[in-house]
Image (cartoon, rainbow, N blue to C red; front, side, top):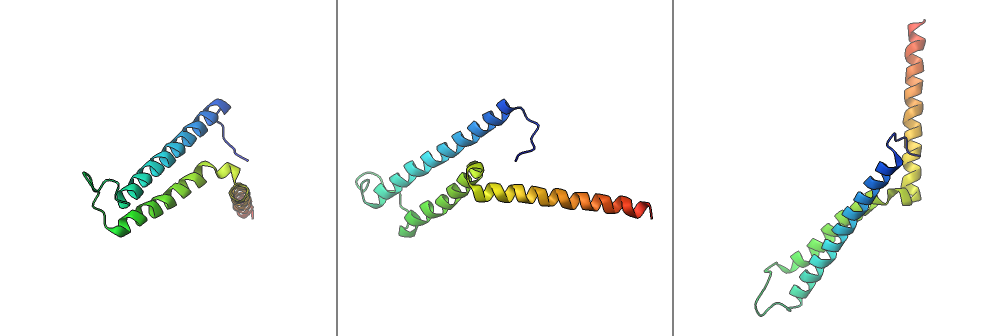
Length: 111
């Protein structure tokens, strides 16, 4: 449940931009890591060598993959029920708390 005053076209446009960003991120991730694997296998040993230590070939995909995972969570959060329900629950909780504080403020003024 989103309380956004943007028009539907702008929301859709923003969502498409987020999706394009994620797909570009995933594409670059795949291309770079294929290159790293081929380099580690010695495909470029004749004329070209990256020169990374052995652990560098594994840490790059691992940590970059973690970043890509969280990027995907942010882009697709509306499709993941757990995240969507948590967000709706948190919004309701904060609104209820604010309403309670607001009522208590005026209640103290009249006593």
